[in-house]
Image (tube, rainbow, N blue to C red):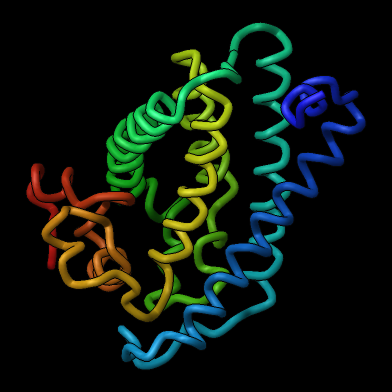
Length: 233
Protein backbone atom coordinates (compact mmCIF):
# COMPACT_ATOMS: atom_id res chain seq x y z
CA UNK A 1 0.00 0.00 0.00
CA UNK A 2 1.36 3.44 -0.96
CA UNK A 3 1.78 6.31 1.48
CA UNK A 4 -1.04 8.21 -0.24
CA UNK A 5 -3.36 5.22 0.12
CA UNK A 6 -2.51 4.93 3.82
CA UNK A 7 -3.24 8.62 4.39
CA UNK A 8 -6.52 8.41 2.50
CA UNK A 9 -7.69 5.68 4.91
CA UNK A 10 -6.98 7.64 8.08
CA UNK A 11 -9.70 7.68 10.74
CA UNK A 12 -11.04 11.09 11.93
CA UNK A 13 -8.90 10.87 15.09
CA UNK A 14 -5.81 10.06 13.04
CA UNK A 15 -6.53 12.99 10.73
CA UNK A 16 -6.64 15.36 13.71
CA UNK A 17 -3.29 14.07 14.98
CA UNK A 18 -1.80 14.12 11.46
CA UNK A 19 -2.99 17.70 10.89
CA UNK A 20 -1.47 18.93 14.15
CA UNK A 21 1.82 17.13 13.61
CA UNK A 22 2.05 18.32 9.99
CA UNK A 23 1.47 21.96 10.85
CA UNK A 24 3.82 21.89 13.83
CA UNK A 25 6.42 20.34 11.52
CA UNK A 26 5.92 23.07 8.91
CA UNK A 27 6.17 25.74 11.60
CA UNK A 28 9.39 24.18 12.92
CA UNK A 29 10.79 23.82 9.40
CA UNK A 30 10.18 27.51 8.72
CA UNK A 31 11.96 28.56 11.92
CA UNK A 32 14.91 26.22 11.29
CA UNK A 33 15.26 27.41 7.68
CA UNK A 34 15.16 31.05 8.78
CA UNK A 35 17.79 30.54 11.49
CA UNK A 36 20.04 28.45 9.23
CA UNK A 37 20.09 31.08 6.47
CA UNK A 38 20.43 33.93 8.96
CA UNK A 39 23.47 32.29 10.56
CA UNK A 40 25.12 31.04 7.36
CA UNK A 41 24.41 33.87 4.91
CA UNK A 42 27.28 36.34 4.59
CA UNK A 43 25.18 39.15 3.11
CA UNK A 44 24.52 42.26 5.18
CA UNK A 45 21.21 42.63 6.98
CA UNK A 46 18.51 44.50 5.08
CA UNK A 47 17.69 46.33 8.30
CA UNK A 48 20.08 46.89 11.17
CA UNK A 49 18.16 44.90 13.78
CA UNK A 50 15.70 42.03 13.69
CA UNK A 51 12.29 42.68 15.20
CA UNK A 52 12.44 41.50 18.84
CA UNK A 53 10.66 38.28 19.80
CA UNK A 54 7.75 38.97 22.14
CA UNK A 55 5.46 36.73 24.14
CA UNK A 56 2.28 37.96 22.35
CA UNK A 57 3.89 37.11 19.01
CA UNK A 58 4.70 33.61 20.24
CA UNK A 59 1.08 33.10 21.32
CA UNK A 60 -0.24 34.47 18.05
CA UNK A 61 2.10 32.23 16.06
CA UNK A 62 0.85 29.19 17.98
CA UNK A 63 -2.74 30.26 17.24
CA UNK A 64 -1.84 30.51 13.54
CA UNK A 65 -0.53 26.95 13.61
CA UNK A 66 -3.70 25.70 15.31
CA UNK A 67 -5.92 27.51 12.80
CA UNK A 68 -3.92 26.06 9.92
CA UNK A 69 -4.51 22.63 11.43
CA UNK A 70 -8.26 23.28 11.52
CA UNK A 71 -8.19 24.49 7.92
CA UNK A 72 -6.45 21.28 6.87
CA UNK A 73 -9.20 19.32 8.61
CA UNK A 74 -11.80 21.42 6.75
CA UNK A 75 -10.10 20.52 3.46
CA UNK A 76 -10.18 16.84 4.45
CA UNK A 77 -13.89 17.12 5.31
CA UNK A 78 -14.65 18.73 1.93
CA UNK A 79 -12.64 15.98 0.25
CA UNK A 80 -14.60 13.30 2.11
CA UNK A 81 -17.86 14.99 1.04
CA UNK A 82 -16.77 15.08 -2.60
CA UNK A 83 -16.36 18.85 -2.89
CA UNK A 84 -12.59 18.54 -3.29
CA UNK A 85 -10.71 15.85 -5.17
CA UNK A 86 -7.17 15.06 -6.26
CA UNK A 87 -5.29 12.68 -8.56
CA UNK A 88 -2.44 10.40 -7.58
CA UNK A 89 -1.09 9.17 -10.91
CA UNK A 90 0.10 12.19 -12.92
CA UNK A 91 3.38 12.53 -14.81
CA UNK A 92 6.21 14.79 -13.64
CA UNK A 93 5.41 17.26 -16.43
CA UNK A 94 1.75 17.49 -15.36
CA UNK A 95 2.70 17.88 -11.69
CA UNK A 96 5.12 20.69 -12.60
CA UNK A 97 2.59 22.51 -14.79
CA UNK A 98 -0.16 22.19 -12.18
CA UNK A 99 2.15 23.49 -9.45
CA UNK A 100 3.07 26.51 -11.58
CA UNK A 101 -0.63 27.11 -12.34
CA UNK A 102 -1.49 27.08 -8.63
CA UNK A 103 1.36 29.49 -7.89
CA UNK A 104 0.22 31.86 -10.66
CA UNK A 105 -3.42 31.86 -9.56
CA UNK A 106 -2.62 32.15 -5.86
CA UNK A 107 -0.12 34.95 -6.54
CA UNK A 108 -2.86 37.06 -8.14
CA UNK A 109 -5.43 36.25 -5.45
CA UNK A 110 -2.93 36.97 -2.69
CA UNK A 111 -2.08 40.31 -4.31
CA UNK A 112 -5.78 41.27 -4.26
CA UNK A 113 -6.24 39.90 -0.73
CA UNK A 114 -3.16 41.79 0.49
CA UNK A 115 -4.17 45.01 -1.29
CA UNK A 116 -7.63 44.89 0.32
CA UNK A 117 -6.02 44.20 3.71
CA UNK A 118 -4.28 47.57 3.40
CA UNK A 119 -7.45 49.60 3.00
CA UNK A 120 -7.63 51.81 6.13
CA UNK A 121 -10.51 50.13 7.96
CA UNK A 122 -9.40 46.54 7.34
CA UNK A 123 -5.77 47.42 7.97
CA UNK A 124 -6.49 48.79 11.45
CA UNK A 125 -8.82 45.91 12.21
CA UNK A 126 -6.74 42.99 10.91
CA UNK A 127 -3.42 43.61 9.23
CA UNK A 128 -1.77 46.23 11.42
CA UNK A 129 -0.44 43.61 13.84
CA UNK A 130 1.68 42.01 11.13
CA UNK A 131 3.13 45.40 10.23
CA UNK A 132 4.29 46.05 13.75
CA UNK A 133 7.22 44.06 12.40
CA UNK A 134 8.93 46.88 10.47
CA UNK A 135 11.91 44.58 10.43
CA UNK A 136 11.36 40.84 10.66
CA UNK A 137 12.24 37.76 12.70
CA UNK A 138 11.63 34.03 12.46
CA UNK A 139 8.04 34.41 13.71
CA UNK A 140 6.98 37.27 11.42
CA UNK A 141 5.46 34.94 8.82
CA UNK A 142 3.08 33.56 11.47
CA UNK A 143 2.20 36.81 13.25
CA UNK A 144 -1.19 37.25 11.59
CA UNK A 145 -4.66 38.18 12.75
CA UNK A 146 -6.77 34.99 12.97
CA UNK A 147 -9.14 36.30 10.28
CA UNK A 148 -6.17 36.72 7.92
CA UNK A 149 -5.07 33.15 8.54
CA UNK A 150 -8.57 31.82 7.94
CA UNK A 151 -9.06 34.05 4.87
CA UNK A 152 -5.86 32.88 3.26
CA UNK A 153 -6.63 29.25 4.08
CA UNK A 154 -10.13 29.44 2.61
CA UNK A 155 -8.75 31.09 -0.52
CA UNK A 156 -6.26 28.23 -0.89
CA UNK A 157 -8.98 25.61 -0.38
CA UNK A 158 -11.15 27.37 -2.98
CA UNK A 159 -8.36 27.14 -5.56
CA UNK A 160 -7.67 23.51 -4.67
CA UNK A 161 -11.37 22.69 -5.10
CA UNK A 162 -11.61 24.41 -8.50
CA UNK A 163 -9.78 21.66 -10.37
CA UNK A 164 -8.80 18.03 -9.93
CA UNK A 165 -5.13 18.71 -9.19
CA UNK A 166 -2.48 16.10 -8.52
CA UNK A 167 -1.98 15.48 -4.80
CA UNK A 168 1.74 15.87 -5.49
CA UNK A 169 1.20 19.30 -7.06
CA UNK A 170 -0.84 20.37 -4.02
CA UNK A 171 1.84 19.09 -1.64
CA UNK A 172 4.61 20.75 -3.65
CA UNK A 173 2.74 24.07 -3.67
CA UNK A 174 2.21 23.98 0.11
CA UNK A 175 5.95 23.34 0.58
CA UNK A 176 6.92 26.14 -1.81
CA UNK A 177 4.47 28.49 -0.10
CA UNK A 178 6.06 27.87 3.29
CA UNK A 179 9.62 28.24 1.98
CA UNK A 180 8.79 31.39 0.00
CA UNK A 181 7.08 32.94 2.98
CA UNK A 182 10.09 32.18 5.14
CA UNK A 183 12.52 33.61 2.59
CA UNK A 184 10.36 36.70 2.20
CA UNK A 185 10.58 37.45 5.92
CA UNK A 186 14.33 37.06 6.27
CA UNK A 187 16.36 40.11 7.21
CA UNK A 188 19.02 39.23 4.63
CA UNK A 189 18.55 39.14 0.87
CA UNK A 190 18.49 35.45 -0.05
CA UNK A 191 17.94 35.82 -3.79
CA UNK A 192 20.60 36.71 -6.40
CA UNK A 193 20.37 40.07 -8.16
CA UNK A 194 19.04 38.55 -11.38
CA UNK A 195 15.88 37.37 -9.54
CA UNK A 196 14.44 40.92 -9.82
CA UNK A 197 14.73 40.72 -13.60
CA UNK A 198 12.73 37.48 -13.50
CA UNK A 199 9.94 39.28 -11.59
CA UNK A 200 10.37 37.10 -8.53
CA UNK A 201 9.11 38.23 -5.12
CA UNK A 202 12.51 38.41 -3.45
CA UNK A 203 13.39 38.96 0.19
CA UNK A 204 14.22 42.61 -0.48
CA UNK A 205 10.95 42.98 -2.40
CA UNK A 206 8.88 41.96 0.64
CA UNK A 207 11.16 43.81 3.06
CA UNK A 208 10.36 46.98 1.12
CA UNK A 209 6.68 46.27 1.76
CA UNK A 210 7.28 46.22 5.51
CA UNK A 211 9.02 49.59 5.17
CA UNK A 212 6.59 51.10 2.62
CA UNK A 213 3.18 49.66 3.36
CA UNK A 214 1.48 50.81 0.15
CA UNK A 215 4.00 49.08 -2.10
CA UNK A 216 4.90 45.51 -3.07
CA UNK A 217 1.73 43.60 -2.23
CA UNK A 218 2.76 40.53 -4.24
CA UNK A 219 4.09 37.32 -2.74
CA UNK A 220 5.70 34.92 -5.21
CA UNK A 221 6.28 37.54 -7.89
CA UNK A 222 6.38 41.27 -8.53
CA UNK A 223 4.28 40.92 -11.70
CA UNK A 224 1.04 42.34 -10.32
CA UNK A 225 2.76 45.24 -8.54
CA UNK A 226 4.54 46.20 -11.76
CA UNK A 227 1.28 45.86 -13.70
CA UNK A 228 -0.87 47.87 -11.26
CA UNK A 229 1.70 50.51 -10.32
CA UNK A 230 2.43 49.48 -6.74
CA UNK A 231 5.99 48.22 -7.32
CA UNK A 232 8.98 49.61 -5.41
CA UNK A 233 12.50 48.40 -6.08
